Image 1 (cartoon, helix red, strand yellow):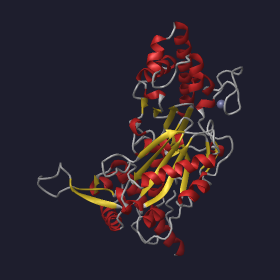
Image 2 (image 1 turned 120 degrees about the vertical axis):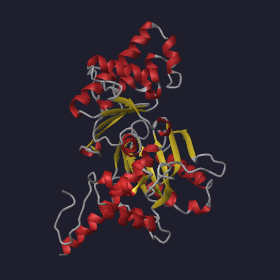
Image 3 (image 1 turned 135 degrees about the vertical axis):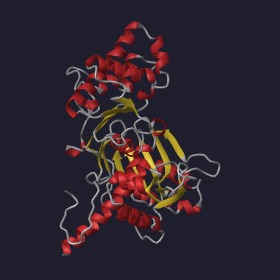
Image 4 (image 1 turned 180 degrees about the vertical axis):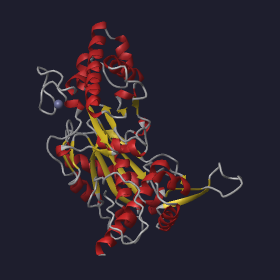
Length: 432
Ligand SMILES: [Zn+2]
């Protein structure tokens, strides 16, 4: 009977998380929509939603405009209470670092003048990691002082996204190509400076979570996410989960070998895709290259240079098609500064189509989160973590909470399915 009690608690928690996740991704929604889409009974939804409203995690927004004035029962919309708590979303990449003070819906908080609390600056890889993290902590403090004291008191954590290999369990950047040479314990260093819990995620994995939660990936179970920024990053999502692989090293499209005799890559191997398409590689072909001026430089370039650039894009397309052949994702989602350029994206898709006509713009597409790319990854990683680790999420939403416990920061449990338990004493295992 004891085991049943534990199971019932798990059932309750998972159903709460399921509802919170659903509302986060689809909200505002009505109770009826929640029941229909999650498979939970109307009675369960009503009960859980009421508890979450009392816990100040959800808020009733009143009747929807569709139902206002209509005959019959009005449809009351429910949403995440975005101001329940706040956190810093920090995205560190080789060229730039961005910080946003975000709410629980992953949106930047605004100051009194209506400006979003976002700060961006060049990543300084010439100084020791600790010195640069000090700068980050300082920027976080500056942002926090642009909001009210009441909100400042509700800042509960820091969520960091960083390029390269990350130990999400320990919060360590193991190998941040192009940023730091040695492992950096971001959780301890930044946590110590700001006196807040810190979670650390790979930047592309974090963006994949954003795509699943807020963007193009919503409702998609299998995705291939590809970033073209200073380097190349990619992530595979299988059955709604990020495929982590051995040592968190997965889907490294940028490090697929294109040319055994090519130049040495940041990863130590030779001739990786990244050595052909990174900013550095593009500058070697076209010295005036920057992502911002790419189109102009390309237009003015000689036929030989254009051919070399097109060749680099063709290699990228080949890598994508080969990877997608193995993974068979429903969608391939592109993001990063280079993919913001329409002509680059179109060229890449054309090259993919040349390999396989099935690569339509519906299968390989640009993220809908393009204008939030600088912070949305770590923001989504934090929101997702809080929704799926309900006890910590709930505890930190109350002013009386003593400490936010995040033992599984960055860990995502199995995709949640509705667990309907109506009969006390059953031995059903929610995990199955
Ligand atoms: Zn490499």
